[in-house]
Image 1 (cartoon, rainbow, N blue to C red):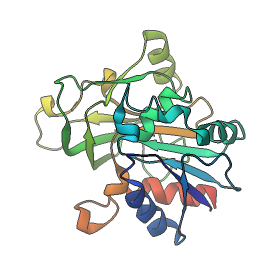
Image 2: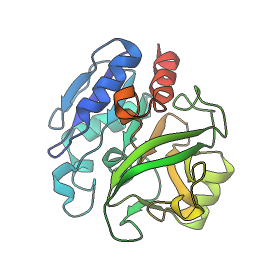
Image 3: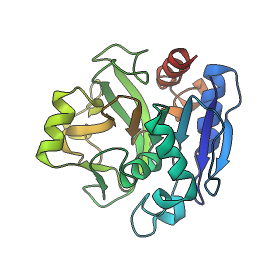
Image 4: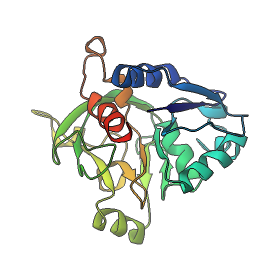
Length: 229
């Protein structure tokens, strides 16, 4: 499997994503600067977390117009797998590759802590290594992770089983801890219509090594590698 990680000015999780991919595949991914206009043959494109262009205008809005995004869209049309994590999710939404919007967190504060997610579907290359309904603990670190979409879009996402992950309360956690940012329906990650694009706000790449305190993000990377091998 050949993977490419896109870097923008302000990206800060590319090395985390690269380490997680290498653990899963044994191969170093390509690091691609946002001003490039072409990608060699790849099986997976990762848009990592950070603060592309300082989150000016809106998070992901400027990055969505970087030269590389024309190529990312072309690769998406070819069915290449794409995952956007945190800022990467915001970029995918701003680029029109996923529906909805990421708004300011409900309490208007940056939130950085572990959260619990429930896997809502294992019918995708990104979630195939998990059981449907499985809980996982991963960190979040964002200020604009409040997912919103109109009722029609939400009905389609829910009805087509395109909600990949949902925030839930963990064992012995009070229910008010479940949703850290106010996302509608507790949505933490969604899939595209063809199920080849995933956007999620939590950081599974930072839960792939025991020193990080959790390895529950490994399933996402292991599943992708196996499916795309």
